[in-house]
Image (cartoon, rainbow, N blue to C red; front, side, top):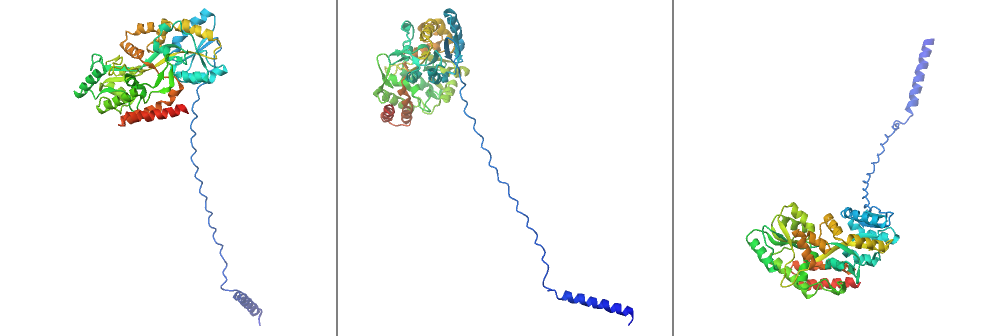
Length: 441
């Protein structure tokens, strides 16, 4: 055999050998393909809860630090300018330093209670007489002697600052409700309440007005209703000879107070007044001549002036022979029980602020009837001042005793029930029972 044939035979043998080896492998065995990796689930981002907006902290009243002076007086922004010239004159005359510090009126009482015991309060401060209950209880106000000028002051103003038989303030102004009359609709002031009802009802019948009389009744308002209570010989608390209120003698369920409730219920039924008059609605109706009369105070006059309605303020006429006596609020000067010199403080008040000049300056700053009779006569040519002043002379001081705080809510609820038609004796009886329980606690 040639060499070529031998090489060819060897190649064939090798090919057969390779084929035999491949045949021994399992034909069913297939190489596994790697399984594709499942993509990892992306975690959804957690929803962030919206951050709650923090409510701004209630703004704390600005701290007031007592000025370094021999006599420090606290007054609001309305009366500070009127006081400063007198304080300066007193300082020059006495050779002392006097400072008048401006404090918001509605913060003065609480600030005095908080700061006076620590020696950071004023020596003298202005305020309302019906703060006295809390101030006396807190021991931060002292009595003063005004006996030398008492006869020069309107009686009700002195009575207002009398507490437990002691005088705690020098009054400078009074405020109270009166009967406001639209002079275009009612040119002459009625002399009796019957005439008020007759004239107002006739205007209503003629289509001239929607209501004869408007006063705040929604919500019920015992303050504005008080002239009716006293006209029927009702009362809130009995009074001692010196005018001090007796908390053991509650008159909410007295015969006179019940009679006043019956009268008001009748006026509502007769459409003489409405039980659905808010303060704002009262302003609107009188300003637009939709009411002949309004029962309110001097705080409402700027709104009436803006509306260009012609009006006058009258004292309340008699009601069935009784004299209506509104609540009277009195503003005055008080002396701190922690004053550096009570004598210096009292001297300033009696010698400088208990004068006609000073009382007229206080009036110019805030036109309310002055507490000093001579000053009142000087400004009484204004018929509105005269009307409120005359109504206030017959009035009763708003009770300053702490027990008065227990009266308002139940008394208001009693009126609400009366307006809805409940028997006044039952309504005021329930109110009186609740008040006595509160006072007794």
